[in-house]
Image (cartoon, rainbow, N blue to C red; front, top):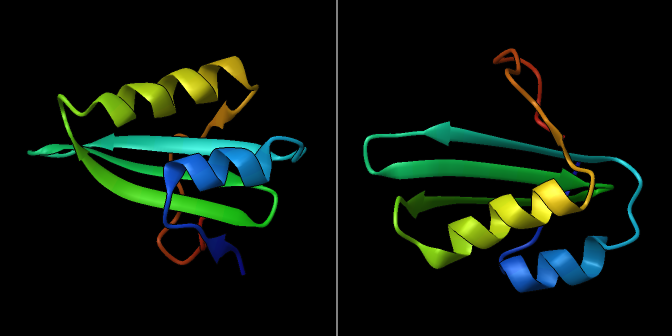
Length: 79
């Protein structure tokens, strides 16, 4: 089971050298629901559309070889 990290900055520092990197961004009525997994670490949060940290998450995932996950069956834990 993954360890959930509360801070995006902490997540970036902890996962810099992880080999398995996945992310998923789902659009909601209020913004985006983001899940990012690297190694045994999980970062999960809902962002409004205009949040600057959301842009940093998207940029970080793109620049650091994270793989996008399209869908996960309900019975499978994302991680």
